[in-house]
Length: 629
Image 1 (tube, rainbow, N blue to C red):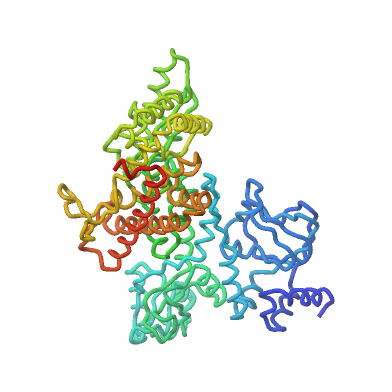
Image 2: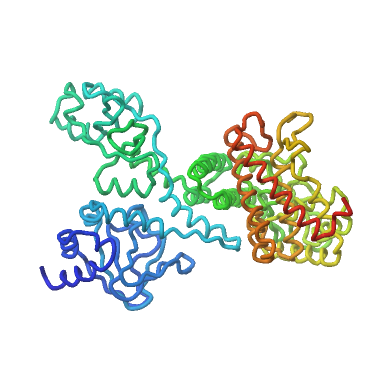
């Protein structure tokens, strides 16, 4: 062995996964390693470049991994591995890799990864662990949803792979031409040979090309002549990362899924390399890219429908509901932004003034997981009196285009007309300030209801400074009218815990939803209203999401930590439960037939009502409301 290879061997053996390899395996790798010298600030690879068939180990110095905005994602020091996920993902690099000091890097080929590392059980297990430990999902308090989305593709690697639940099979005596006919009829690229429903072999399109089309075997032969056997099996819980590593390790494109992950268990599915590609193309990050390339509301409708499938998959795999909520909200916001861009091109001229589009209600709180109706508003900058009518007319027409395209996508028009194409909800900054001030200074029941909707607004498009001015005006009005929070507090107590004296669920008495339970009005909104009120009392402007509001309250009021943590748990459960019900019944999930629930679901719902009771008791004490009720 030459001196350079010896030095590489001596270095790598001190770091995982190389220390898990046999001496011969690591020696073979060391002989083929490329040594790369990088000066400070020199790039190794950049965003958009095709991924090369190598991953890297830092020998000396440090390599920084940066986003396009030059934010540092990770710093790789001596012994650290990077570029591996990109190698498995293929395509283009998503990050810049740049030396942040003079550095030496070892470059290791995909061939070595397949031949020595993934073939070693311990080293392969380490790679799986590294996928998990390298996932970084920050719970940021800013509104930069792209930050969240960039991590969504990382989650993809740890998700359970979405395999085909109906594998096409045949018995070992089947002739090759018969198997090929079945594959053609079923439009599949593989067929599993089974015995008593246990997989014993597999044939793929590639086998038909290399074994039959070349004349090596006759189409009249039995499938046993060309099948790959034994098959590689995994349990139903296989993750995307496990699947990719297994396919690399065994140089195959299909995995058999069985009940317990062994060959002696019943076949339940088939997972192909194509399935992995489709899964990667249907994560939130990929959908966002498609939205930005879209050319019509009809295309956006298809993408939003695929978001429902993404939502279903995330729920099935127990990804945290608050993370799912941020991703779906980001998709909804990006769809809205694209539609606004379309709508501006339909107008006969550019906007005559700066404006901002606001999502209100559940979308404003980043909690609109299902395709519910629209709630939105528009604010435009103050203009001269003589320009006002033409300016407002322009924005009303623009809003009408936007609202109609959102309807095409699947967001129904609001029955109460709380949309920006309504003159009431399309106003200048000064008009909006006056409107909020009127609601705050005259807090009758109607105005309090509007406050609970409009206080949860989120900037989606346009001039963010207009929204900041509006927020400052609102809090100034609240500061000048302390009694408003007391009225808002009393309003927040209008929906007590939804159980009767006999501990039965309170259901609708009449109408379309008679005898059904309104999970939104009776369970979720009391927690939403309480969080909003408590945050307003602390003069906090920038946090609208209900879960994030309670998390902030934990920081602000450690003495009430247990109550707020209970509210977080309850709201997550309610949000999950409503979303699952909506997906199951293809509706908003709001009204629930209690007869369809099992005892466990009923008990879980009742537990959330205790959180409503606790936080409402806190509000009664805080705002001295007991004597007013």
